Length: 178
View: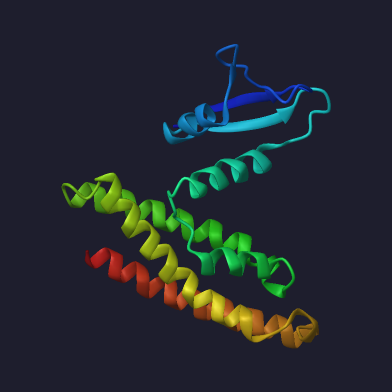
């Protein structure tokens, strides 16, 4: 069970943890998340939800420190997806893929003693994510956004999604075999 912690951002750009009544840094928010908490970050004055913006900033800082989880081809594909038909299906695909990945991670850690070592697991995590996204990226690169229109584009997207699901299922079988 996770706790959602409300973090208010003030006009001074300082972040305030309403649960502990203290100012926090991005690093401290990152640690709260790593401990299993969910956070919601809101602008104190307007009430605007800033959670996505700050989570992306935390990821950017982690990546810049050399804690690379997202391969360049995945990041490139994500940028491309903003201008393609994949933009509509990619968020759901990534969400479902990560859910399945998390479930498999938990199952593997329960079955295999010692697999939970951070460095070993980060490499396995990066390799699995790279393999999953490699199937998706070439398909996105084949068709420019202008050529994907109407029902033909919808059919292609459905076929691409089916292919990705098939490849994901095969990867999950491999993970189960570990």
